[in-house]
Length: 254
Image 1 (spheres, rainbow, N blue to C red):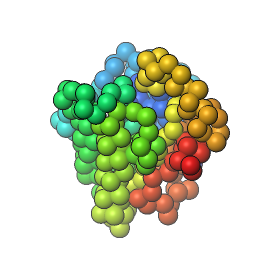
Image 2 (image 1 turned 180 degrees about the horizontal axis):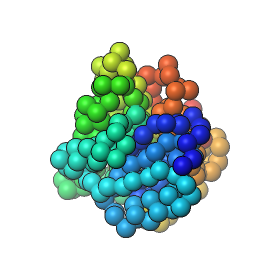
Image 3 (image 1 turned 60 degrees about the vertical axis):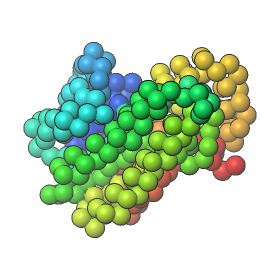
Image 4 (image 1 turned 135 degrees about the vertical axis):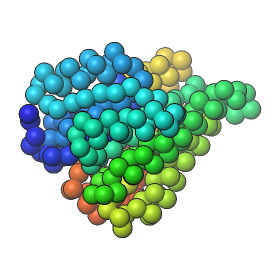
């Protein structure tokens, strides 16, 4: 097994691992030495990614779970402990995006989907991960968004949900830092992947507007976001607590 790097010896839980930033994080964390538990709803994609990682000599397992359902998250954390014996690092990356719908036209169902996935999902993950980490400490990284820092051209519930992730991160960080658990968040800018590509297809001209509004005028590769999560989860970020780190090509410097 390949176990060298800044995450060597760590056991990591990655939600939303079937594609995009989550799948990139699985590759980056493994490359940096971690053993990984991949968690998402799509079993076929998880199985394929796990096979890829194992074929490259890494230690990887997977389990399906919907982060909205607390019992499923609890079971996923228990499987992590059963496979690896402990949990050192969690990357809570599962999320739901939304079309740009005017607030007054947003359906209850869309609001519930976004808030349940993006806020309750992080809440569910953290409460079970923290219980598992309390005996020996650990690090948690939550995925917010530039929409969690400033208003962006997406649906209002998405902006609200990502602001809530920042709040949950700060509250939990303050509560558990002295008990050996560091909790931080990343705020990715526009990043290539299924969710963004789907959104861009339905928003003609949006990619050009994003590029023109970003000091580094391009979209991010998922691996660039995963690298930031890996750093926050490593001992190299040992004095970083309660931060929300923009990884956005300069979008939020405006």
